[in-house]
Image 1 (tube, rainbow, N blue to C red):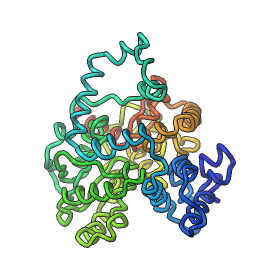
Image 2: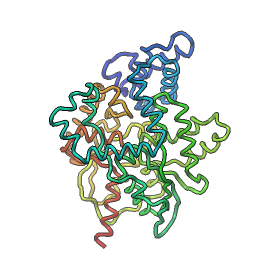
Image 3: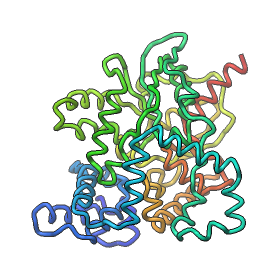
Image 4: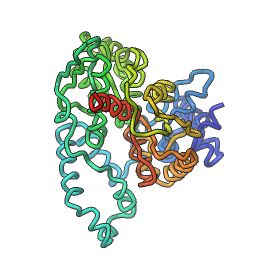
Length: 409
């Protein structure tokens, strides 16, 4: 049942490129029948990790845990080591994403570069053609860095007129650098629904990038940092607005189950982490009195939101709560767009095929506004659609509707 849900199997029709085939390879390694080789590594990293197979599996096999364990074993065995690969892994996983202030400093530098217009000028004179081919292809996809980050937009504690709940807000790393405005929108929506919002300063990466790429120890360290940054007992929920991050954030209990100091707190953490759409439906969305500026929208499902977190109907309910907004269903809405963390960097050819398929389906809807709920998907769709459609998020459209109430009033 998992085969027709797997994008890589549907592309190649090879058993080894399917969830069933990959599990067979993992079992052979675990039973000592197969060595961990470069070919095994290539197969594990060809997998998108979209978890569509997990949704399809009637036996409830936790493919995500197997997949992450297999990649960790690949890294321990060192079969994928290469000077260039090792450098980029060290720079991203060990340096930038382990030090939030350094990551933001790099973001400021990139913002200055983009603001100066040098990126466009050098692209125009083809100076960037001197870069290696892979970097040439990636450079135009670089996200536009926000003018200010979340800590400048959101106070440490913000309280609504009528407080019903107290929640923590996760600002993320890429979400913070590229989409701090969506974090502000999330805070506004929570306030409009009676939630006091607690937002710790200079938050760390959640560790999903590390866990998905075999750096388990670093993922565990980041999980401990996240847990320590919130007063868990005082909060009704911890809110995430990034589908991929949220899927990982809800597995800290598994990640830290052997840690004597954090195992129990990690279980408590897992129970309190809620996707923003999930939380709004749980507490009852306050329907805005005025509609959004858009009429017809479609919705692309983040793989880790629908397959990892099983949050499927709630984003649609958020959109349908906005007066005047018409939601048009997207064909294959839960089929991966090809972003898949850093898959569009490591497997650009396969990623491009998936993006083309997704864009074709979006164009079939005729909608000029596309919503999604994950920064990776957001960037991927924006790159694929260009100026033909606006890419935004359900929580942003809801926040706009709430703001319209105060304008009309």
